[in-house]
Image (cartoon, rainbow, N blue to C red; front, side, top):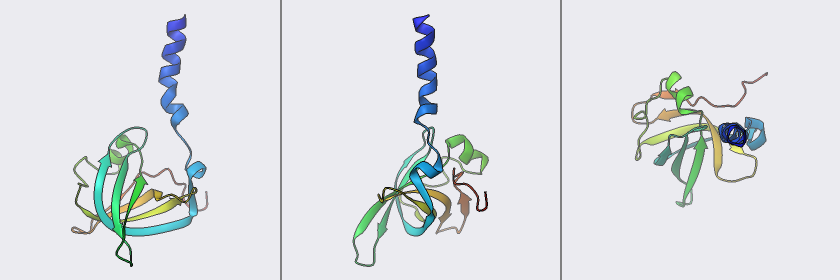
Length: 128
């Protein structure tokens, strides 16, 4: 019996760790940034990638972008090789509510090819 309860708790952990878009991100604070991909994390429940963005003052800031799950990204046309460390990308996203340099990506455009991929975002569509 104890084993069954522990198994249920372990299986429920990812669900408990999952959050809604509105809990962490603000759709009224859109941003569009261009920079170089520094790191990719293809993990559940959300894929993250990190981009180094050079400001007008020349200072480089690292931004973290959350996307959908790896499965959701694959359904949207992504592969693990769609975006690589070193790629120049433009990201349209909604900023984190806490003011950190994190955002929920909506689209990612690969600057070298012009290809735009949807980020399987958890952001609700306008009007919903």
